[in-house]
Image (cartoon, one colour):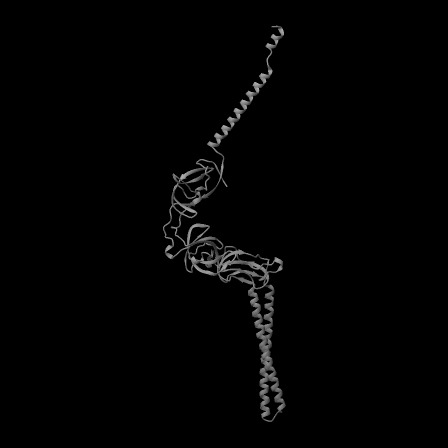
Length: 406
């Protein structure tokens, strides 16, 4: 073998070395990717990301045992006596004596208007009345003198000492004064009645409460103009305030005409205010209004509230249950446990459970269900009032998961 061939055998093949290096790099990168994916999957399975959920709060069952109703409906508390108090005349507000929430009695002064012009008219009317009375007094004096003169002339004529013409003149003077006396008396009467009108106008500047109640709105301030009709391009007030007679509060509900046959006059009703869902208010049907709303296919029903309470205020939302008879009214025995939305319960082979939210994680807790009434469920064990539970828990939710409440 010659020297050139030996040299070729001693040279390194760079192509085989480069391809081997690339292969190792690919293997290492693939291993790193697989490792990262495995770590992510393990972390996801063990901890998981936050799950967005909706929640509700368990509330004390309280109240009394629930009764079956023939019909449920919703409505609002409405007053039968409500008035926006205004003045009979247009004027400038000088004083407002009311505030929202104030109790007022019938006849109480609510506000005063500017009465300067009316007061001057009244003073002028009184002066005219005095003048008319003075004129009446003068006429009476002159009439008395004319009566005596007529009597003397009559005696002279009877004795043939005076002419008949003199007697006729005296009688005419007397008759003229009688007519003037009647005119003076009429002027006094007109002046007196005119003053009565002005005094009534003066009273109209004082705005009083038409009935006893509570002020729910104050609509005017001193310095503003007020009128019984809308005027002044929107700058004139039409009322001082609004009064509601709290004794006249009742409930109005719209009942579907398909079920109105289940409602009758004097039927017992259970009412629950949306603001106080655990408070059962006894009530009864006053009247079924004999007309239907064509657009809503409903009939209005008026319901009397049999318990007066300051917590009941106008325009509150209320749910009512029409009972079959008076024996179905609730007893005094309170319910035990708490009430939650039925959508919060999870039923499986182990029984019923709920997911309780504690800070940002959930805890699955077994509960004892006492009864279910439509959308609500009463729980007697395993849950306390005020605890927050998950509504419609997702299938993948487990105890210990982190959640975000929407």
